[in-house]
Length: 220
Ligand SMILES: [Zn+2]
Image 1 (tube, rainbow, N blue to C red):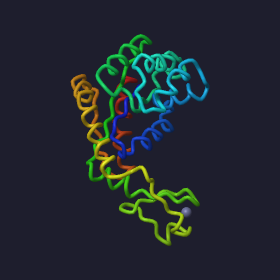
Image 2: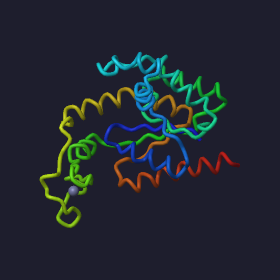
Image 3: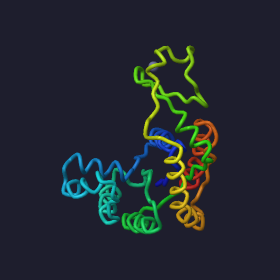
Image 4: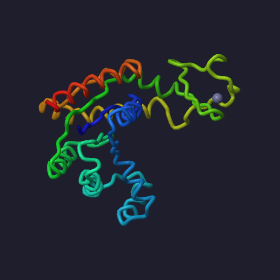
């Protein structure tokens, strides 16, 4: 089972990926993590990408696919991968497909979390983190009260880099980038839309339903 997970920032993609990793014994493959690892280990690739990344430039598709090949060719990861944040365009879709085929695997399904911009804004802007105990609250959905949080309210902090315009821009970019990819996988009958407006547990319930029925079908 190789899965591609899609969702705009604030859709709860990270949480759902972690659930899947734990319950289905999968590996989360994020190109961002792979690049950070190369930089940390000061490899040839790491040295090459360090300065462009720190300047906010994109890393070439060729380098990304080389990093991905190391993972896809690794027998331990074979048919146990969740791709998070990749592919981002149709060229990358084709690159990934070629690579996966080369190692005699395939993409089993695409899970796309659907959420409204309004909800994303509330989820992100409402987020409050306690710098004392590390608990995360949300002023709209899960506000800190004297019952669920004992620390002094002065410890509750918002992330400064989040503002409504930045979130809107990221969301619009995400929709524009991913639409052709979703259409492509929809034509291949691999796309599953997930209602990301629900509670985290209910969203995961939908995902489990899809994966379990795919597994049952694959094992026939
Ligand atoms: Zn606290």
